[in-house]
Length: 173
Image (cartoon, rainbow, N blue to C red; front, side):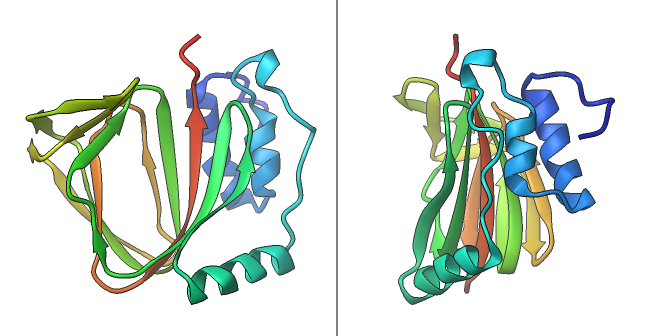
């Protein structure tokens, strides 16, 4: 990781993970380099080989869904293959940031805005059927979208999309 990334907060994660990906560093190295707190530190690294990821993608292509690659107290990464699908409501999280890297296909995100009729679904998690003032983004293969905590978002996939989701998780301590 670059020397300037010293902050072990979620901002360090949000800056470090995409920078590491662009620099060609392993995803697990980026996730483990900036633990949110000392108690969240895990093994120094985990390697996900191209063969393992290819096998996961093959299985997900046969049966669309998600598979978790990496889970610890402070981060999660997940591969997702999705067909035509649209979220019914907008969501936002008080303690989670998201980074989406589109590996194949295309999807549309509506981001930002002010919720109308928002309701809490569980601790630190919210949904809203309507939002005023969103921005629509069409993501294609190779695009990366960072959504910080508190930002409303909703995904609509018209055909097919394969993406990697990296989520930082703050326990709220």
